[in-house]
Length: 277
Image 1 (cartoon, one colour):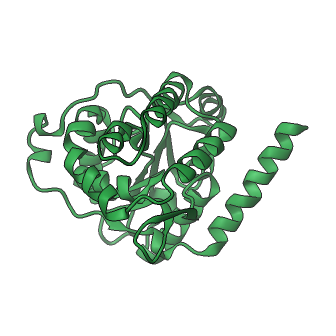
Image 2: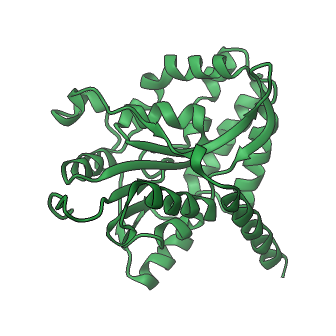
């Protein structure tokens, strides 16, 4: 149970939520594969491959190397996609695909944090074109997400402008705290993955949600609270909090500096060396 309403004479606070398997029961990006196929963006083989990736993700989460392979594959896959078409497909299918897989427990937490006067920030490795509409659906105040480079023709180039992963998430949170006046020692964070340990350890109230084995060990060792979310429910069935229009999600990644990307690259390299050793 969360603490009471914020004392507005104190510094502002926020609750930072990872998205996939923390707020929703699946991978947000992979969930749209069938819609992208119907829209002519991918072929049947790509649909089958993303379905398999979704299975691996749900069965045991994805470790660092699997996440890197998935990132490389999806970056190459979306090269040449028209950004506006992607946004339209997501908007048309958002409620049918995402609404049924939102964890009831996560939705309740979002309500409780808002009631307590805290901002809610979604921090996700998935692409902004997918995460931003989901954040708006959830009533999030801000969104941090991966951003792809868009060419002059309005299509993805296949290159990544900002990768919201590992230490870059923690860097984003620290920059948001500086710009918004959040007291991180009084903030909350939620994630299912060990790759988000940097994000979790940057706040005073870290929570492991449906944690993978590595994060579960880390949480137990550090005394972090472990939560079990297992009840997906449609938001429109939840009364009364989600019967009101959601707050517009504000995109925060534009303020993220190059230092975050540099920190991420160094972390990836160190992880790879450690794996080889």
